[in-house]
Image 1 (cartoon, rainbow, N blue to C red):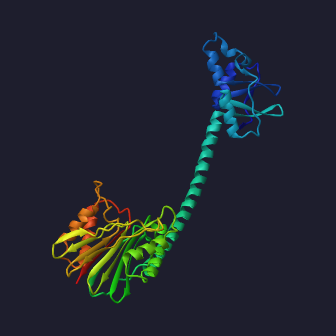
Image 2: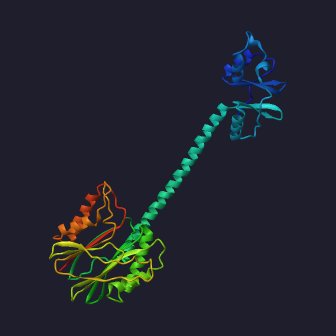
Image 3: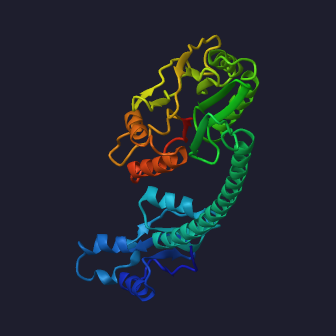
Length: 384
């Protein structure tokens, strides 16, 4: 409020009131009779009456044009309540009265200045709080990123093979690109006995930590069940039972194949996974390994059908997760399995390591400016 407000007697002239208001650049004066507030004279009072006043009005006493018995406010009222009262009563000035005496006046100009200062202080305080919160989030994010990287290293070390096994029948190469440090794609090699070589590729639903946890569970379960039999259908059925306690929105796709070193037969079964491709060196053709089966971890008593394929020297097998065909370019086109099959046929002459490197660049060119939206794994092998 404005303390020590300007006050005039009721019998002082309008000219005196206007003179004081102009001199002090104020919009109102209080009108008091023996220190008792009897009215307020404002710019609005002047404009309302001057337009219709007769000549000589400057010498009229203030009491003729003042607002009598004006609304007042106590000094302990907050500025927000004062603003509310002024808006409700449609006035721009409120006398501040204590014990019957006018001790100040508050105007809309004061409130605007106070509100502006208050808002500036509040913005500064909120900005400081947000800056502190942001710094804390950045610190936690950096800490979480560090832990994620450590966890990713552990996942690769404990779950994924360090390198393909040195089996003379095959030459392997792997492209593994999780969307985040932790991912749900998983692959493994196993040798149940001296005569059989097994390979699993799997994809846990989702991304990041939840998918990685499911992949770890699948890895542990596969390590146990793959030792019990060389039949892919039995391994997938046992793996499905081990994963049956997953949450409702969690599941795993998987493809498992076993190569018989003596007969050169590749026996395989599929649990909802994208069909791998077989390139026949003899026929110069690439075809999918058709085998259907339900997802792992969804239904307890699923059965899986086995298929067989005789592999010859020069043949190729290409396994992948759905992140590969689901990649899109700037036009919204997906890479798809047809493009992948064509790429395999056109590049079957390359060594697996060169094949994977060329494919990685080929996929990057196809995506243009689009980022991957899923973990991506591609594993290719050449039969000797």
